Image (cartoon, rainbow, N blue to C red):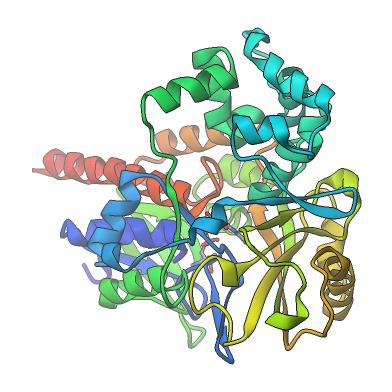
Length: 460
Ligand SMILES: Cc1cc2nc3c(=O)[nH]c(=O)nc-3n(C[C@H](O)[C@H](O)[C@H](O)COP(=O)(O)OP(=O)(O)OC[C@H]3O[C@@H](n4cnc5c(N)ncnc54)[C@H](O)[C@@H]3O)c2cc1C
């Protein structure tokens, strides 16, 4: 049969690319359709005038074997860059100033970020009994119960803002930060868990990128996929034709073509997944369409080094909600990796909007730029005007795993049972970081391979 594949992958972000490359290397007949003109989805690097800006993720936490395996497959293991040691230092806005966040127990005791009362409250965490009832808890409820309000405001809240651009009152602890949830379940306390992990010598992972920026990863995978990777090919519909999946693809010239496969991997954002699966599975399609997202505006700025008073000697700063700033936070990319800024210059990347202030990400670009510069100028003691500025808007930047997220996971499990050979991938359900996407896609691909092998033995 013409246009017949073992697997059709929909979506050329890091999730879909990971699956397609593994399948290709295992010699399955695979094709990946990506609707846009470039691979990478949210991973997007912008090179301009000797600056390298990340417009999506800036760093990837390299903390899993699946990521090393993927880099190995792409011959990128030796080429990865580890962030400068200073990047371990993180800042927080407190009373209108930028102050370093404590990194360990000793600095927690000496820091001025938290009041003595808050510090005592954190140390008491050791003795707070673990929650054992089944009621789902928000990140904020968990933080207040175990660590107190001040720690929620100045540590936990900014942390979930940094990862999800999310609202701690609404995010589900169990689904948004499953590792923290699991530590309480296993060890009874976060401090006890930290001690056990330290004793076990568990590595926490490095923040990494590549010399030309993160986009080197999707671009390398796409080039290794060769003619199994199709750009400007939008999947319109997935349906069933006998035992096979029938995938309708709109090609660059506007015409549509049908492709057939034993299995499909859907690795696209929720609205797209809902649209293309509406015929195959109405229930799943309807349910997933309501998965909430937070919008983010990313403001990339280049300054002459002498115009920025702050030494930018760290990863960046986060602005707690209680500080009423315009920006959610700001990274210092030229302090993370070499060659991120033009000689004699520094680069900054600010994030605006998120789940708490979505309307800010929908302001006019000029407005966003002006308000961002006004906000960070006193914080970073900036004197001059930027020599480079760019605003990038992500209307649906990050899916939000809110209270009740379990229902989305269950509906995906039911979908996969109802539709053997069809798999839901991407960042919709099990983690939004690039590391989560690589790890989950690798594991999902193992299930696809078992399915394909089972299929072969069924028809033989
Ligand atoms: C501003 C921002 C900052 C971030 N910062 C970090 C960070 O610092 N560290 C980190 O680890 N993570 C970060 N993330 C999160 C991370 O980048 C994403 O969760 C991850 O890259 C998602 O990958 P994905 O492949 O699942 O989906 P996506 O990257 O969304 O890819 C989906 C792809 O599907 C394509 N598509 C959609 N519909 C169709 C269709 N019908 N047919 C064919 N193709 C289709 C899209 O064009 C897209 O290329 C950030 C995200 C954003 C937006």
